[in-house]
Length: 195
Image (tube, rainbow, N blue to C red):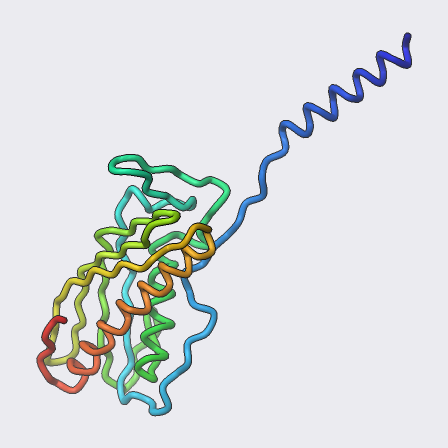
């Protein structure tokens, strides 16, 4: 009888431990693996400022839009760093590669001219099986010229978290293309029209 009680106790303990175990946490980044740099170096630097993001998505876990007004916080799917930092890191890497320059944010200024890039994300929607939607207001400022624009980018997201993150990376790459055009113009002392 004592042996049976021990077996029942051990089984109950194992069942309780199994119930307490949680699914693994996955970490995702928006910074692309690699971006092919341009062959010629730009005669200016960029300074990509901190990126503002909407408060409803500004948390460690991924936030999914479900339907018209529902969201779901995915505790097991997290960003590798705060979402604003992830977006800033992606834009910094994309712009530096596209322009053939360096992001000198937080570093002492050298002799080369610097173009300041500010991005304010207004919408960052994620829908599994739907789209990754990015809406942002942004500005670039040089010594004598500036441009202020807005962009809306929608990329098909696929049905997995990996394809969703890839869609957001593509959206940020497309935003970087638009910003890079304005940065080149402003760095050359020209007015830049929004696309």
